[in-house]
Length: 364
Image 1: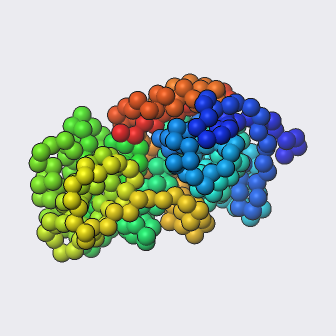
Image 2 (image 1 turned 120 degrees about the vertical axis):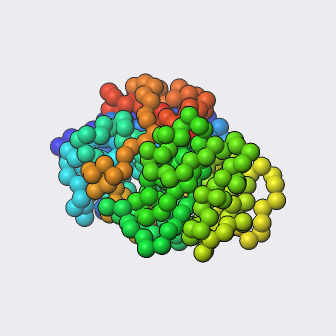
């Protein structure tokens, strides 16, 4: 670039420091297989405000001052050595790796973010930056839990969707959340029948994403209902989102009547109700460490081999709906507060003039 751009960031200065401080930040040029993205829209995730609130109790490896933010959508302004997939001016959606690798220049809450090129995908013209910014961390979390061999180890998604000779199913709770909306679409593209849970008002939304069956997570018969829906199928495990989902999934996996069952629950979030869980059930919390962001990770394979064509062909769509809550880095702290309140089938994002704005991708 002819002249180094002036960068600015929303800094978390110290453990539990409030509010975020908006001030200058170094502009970092890309390294090998890295690009620099000029941010146009940024998504807000619960991990962002939770880290600010909880301090060292969460992500204790992070050093201060730090730049949070995982969801980036914008344009490429610089490419590093070895980059072949992108050129300057390309529109992209990308996962910022800061919290995985403790690297502030890879944080999303700034004007310019360094992105690993294998964690980015071209953004079709029919998808706005705001719509795209609901996706990155959701794709990251869903992909790692669904496809990594350390968790559920499902077959990877394909375009067109993978066809399986045997009937395979997976249960994904919290289907209207940001991660749930993404996990459903990925699992369907990987050739699995999806059974999900949601509030009745979101049943149609979740089915539109590809779920075959959706049940009310508050129903007294939800365990029986899900067990009946997956009876006779190869049950590939459970993906847990939401309080009480671990207990629900464990009960279904324990009693499953079918040719095979993978007694593993990939835990994206939610507390158990405190009941007894069969010791044969493995509950694995999804950890997004450096391995998840590595170039040979399943997340990389989703971003490079699946997402470009899936977005272009509308086989995979940004979901849930993005809710814009303001413009400018100065609005991030306010967006944290809105995100904490939660909304159904929406996500907070920030977009516009900064280059970015806050939208809300609010998982439930």
